[in-house]
Image 1 (cartoon, helix red, strand yellow):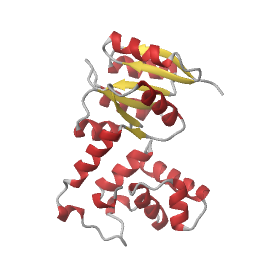
Image 2: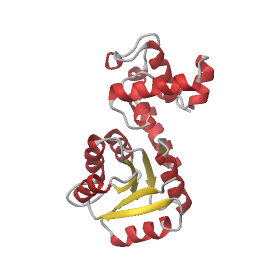
Image 3: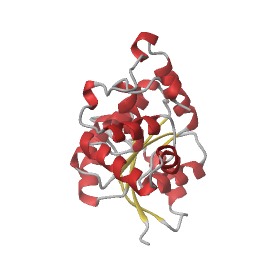
Length: 227
């Protein structure tokens, strides 16, 4: 199999060098370029077509969130993993809504970075554990009256989904894997994958994490449904 092609985006050259040194020791990962700001990242992504873009969130000219949004609009080929020292809730939500497939903090271990690249390259999404906890805590602070939803009916924003697609989206937001959803709904895992692909297409989503945020944002599920 060809190596996973990675573009490094950070306004600090030493950070980029550090990431390059880590990744170049991996036989299945190739660093294809470096960008010093968000505008360069958008341009270089279009030119180099990397599989993964490691994107700093705070940069001059164009920050990582807006750069991610522009990259996501251009097509599904390149997946973005946000890297930052600031694991604040607003940054997590903004980056994931913009189309990022992952979110990691820079002070994490090197093997976590490598594992994240391999995971996202397969089409999955990943978050640093402490970021996931903060994300769920953010949703848990939503007032109770805003959380109440009639499970039998879809919120108006989700009218495009079939009843079974709504079931799948609820299950995804509860943290179930494809195999677990298939068992829960008594269908094949291939059928679940088809439903998920349909959900992604109908709402122009790039990752499972974006689908979960959609479920929370529209009120389809309440925070207590999360693992």
